[in-house]
Figure 1 (cartoon, one colour):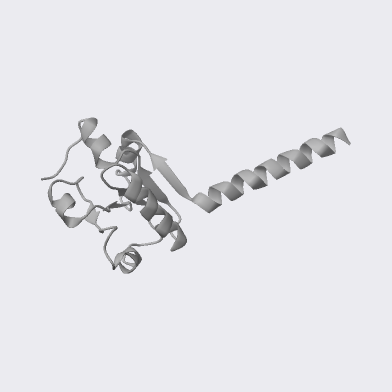
Figure 2 (tube, one colour):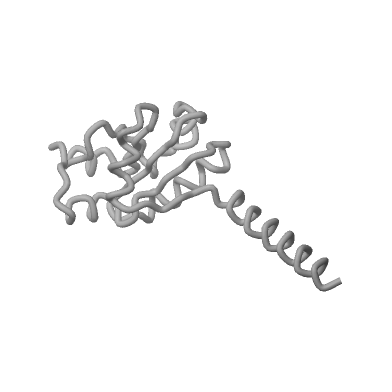
Length: 129
């Protein structure tokens, strides 16, 4: 009986743990983790800042999708749902919010750069100007 309770407890823990992971689907990543992910050919890098912010400097190979644009939902649909997406903004808040939009739209692998481009620059990484 004791073994049955242990197995049952582990089963519930596994189900709850997996459910939480599936509900979120968003992984916050560090600058170092992002550099590793950028080596994958299929990754989509998206800067969700305004066009004005983007033009002041961006991470190489990023495309700009303005989080505040009235067309944000249509712009998201132009991304490939089957490829990983890394999002960043100035500090990580807008990109986190946009990550949730992507998950709701059916994207499977969504990554959010913790600290945004500010952290990227702080760690001495290159910005395209």
